[in-house]
Image (cartoon, rainbow, N blue to C red; front, side, top):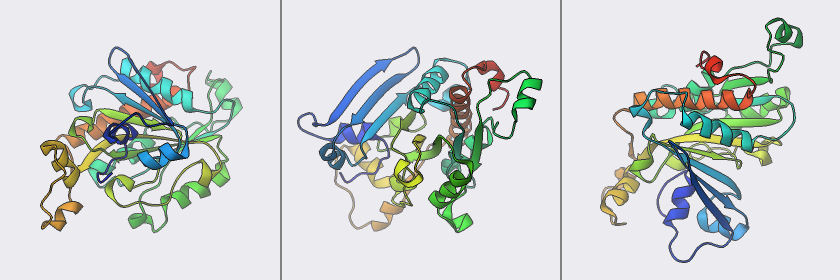
Length: 289
């Protein structure tokens, strides 16, 4: 497949011919969302689709720049799907925002990390004093990018996880899509982890259960599409001007990307907070974001 996308739903859709063996797909709808779950169950399907074995949940909704409401069906759908992917039992959850906050389309992760309700530092005595004995331990981190820190994102997360010893890691990052109609209106959740930068041809070290030793849940919103893939989507053809090699390095993002990032960060952060603190009313958690 000669197009760039981080979305399993797009890779599955672009496969022609008969239904791929080893891929389970189901769809359901809620008031404001369409939820598609794809599970890749064997190595042959993994190779054909180009995504690791595991679950990929896509939540589609109206464009985030159109609606500033947070306490609605979209929040419920996202928080429920995150809870389904979390391992059972007690323990700390580490939430990591990946990306470069200085580049708006890549700022989703860092902005989400700032809005996470971090509680790991609150001891049992203080929880009792403030009447929140049910608080689960959560910590958050924004890693920056290799060009800023000189350290691979995966190395930072592995080091912090070695100290925190979380039961799971939730990684939030901006993604690349192949279709314009998915920019700023799609959330992908997966239990396979993530390879930062893969959607824009700048892959870094893999962040997954294999590399960290604990379950890794990756959450992201597509904010960019590369120029070649965009042309194919618009023209419905694989032909492109082969004399313009520089076009392969061009990335396109929506004009209203500032609003998309702002609202997506708030919605995802609130969904994560609700999933990690299910005994607290969303209205109270809204004050955090």
